[in-house]
Length: 157
Image (cartoon, rainbow, N blue to C red):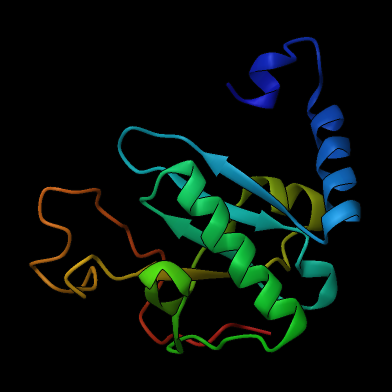
């Protein structure tokens, strides 16, 4: 269950406090949005460091958490990927970065904490056969992955 479901008496401000504590302890938090149609997850807490928040769509919670934590750690320690950059992760995950066109539509808690200047960068993963969502053969019979921006669109400052 979700934190808010487990704490029905809590307010949205209480959950913001939980997120702030996680961000203070770890540098960022991951918010997973479960959905039968298209689950997704995103980071909250990279924005104060001048970085875009990260988003992954169409994967189960454990995989989403692992990918986002790996990417966030890389961005904090190494470099911010640009839209159009590709990356190979451990466990054979390979993907391309796409600027999220409308972060306010997908990263609500980040927006609530940091305001409208929030930027988003989606890690668009390839399926087991190496196909991207732009390919008609992408993930046949598996989860779909919406792409939440234009391919290789630059992030606005």
